[in-house]
Length: 174
Image (cartoon, helix red, strand yellow):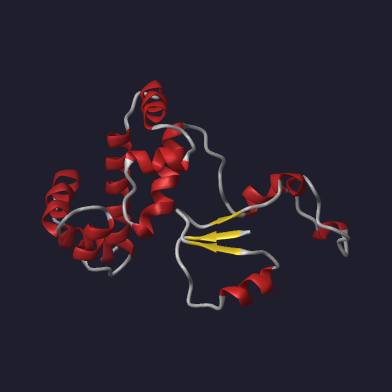
């Protein structure tokens, strides 16, 4: 089945028919569920051997590296949830199928905390969004979890020594 956070503008029945799988809406994050028995199965009756792909090869084809640390897993969840707003520590823990305390202990074992990971993620995303898009600063602020743009402006000046506007202007000159 396929899970989606909310109903799409598409006819869910038609979409389910096209992908030959049920559609479930109102979920926490988008997902595709695959039966465990199907994970190790190669494509049925491929036309040629070169047309087959194993799940081991899938990550390299998608240019994805496997998660090596809890911090990377948290960062991936934050990235995944970014379009719907910044995820809280408990939301990230729930997404990783662990409790908040277990997440805190795992991050502490890596010499960091959720707050530090989240701040690094926000700074990184602010730089990317300001440097590579023309999204208004107010919208970037909201997306990154700030109540207003003043908070992002203050934090960005602390990170870079310049305002978001001047950063964007200097970045576009490169």
